[in-house]
Image 1 (tube, rainbow, N blue to C red):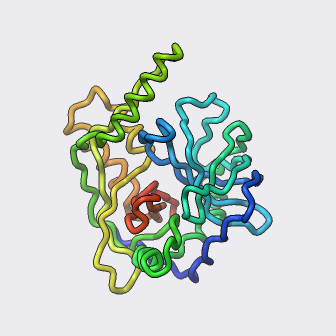
Image 2: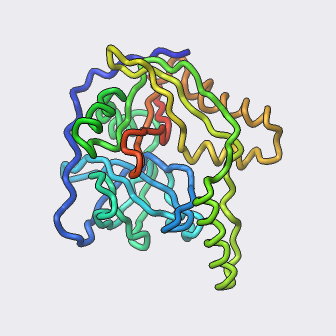
Length: 279
């Protein structure tokens, strides 16, 4: 549907190893990804946040987990494309090199990075990998790189499907969280599964790419459905197609995907967000 100019950058360096100690590390992070909230048997309702460390030559990818945005004070509910200061520890229960455990009480929000040249100056030089190369690295040298931003060569479709709902273990996590809130007299709304899922179909820039189909885990996909909760299925489907295909994949716009895998399925990558910039 849309053909995009392949990246001409050299391969990005491998992720830095986690430090040996378990002490807190201060960092500045440009937030690029807020994934959709999901139930966790360990942490309750969680969101995976990712971004690029800034300063002192440390421009490496960072995953911050777990975060429960709905439980945070408004001051800590940072947005995409803000540079935030915080401290974090290496996540020892996750062997992916980019994974860190944040101290949410330490978060200090900065000014948002505006679209255009300022944002492109911080992100464009990270658009380097083809999806095929990412998968080959994870298979040959696990855990490999688990976060990246890639520029598709051609995006052919966005497939919207009914969501079957939470898996049984996820629903049990929600039920436990609701029971705990009742026990302590805290009122909250149980996390509801979105009505639809969406998958991009595309080819990456690798010369022999057979094509990829990757589900979206973008917060914006869930937020859009929440805003349209009183609309018909057909209306919601059209709105998803319009926002994530017609608006984000069109002539004159540079489109790239933030992609990442999951700790239990290192060879399965999803689209965590869509980066767009005028050409």
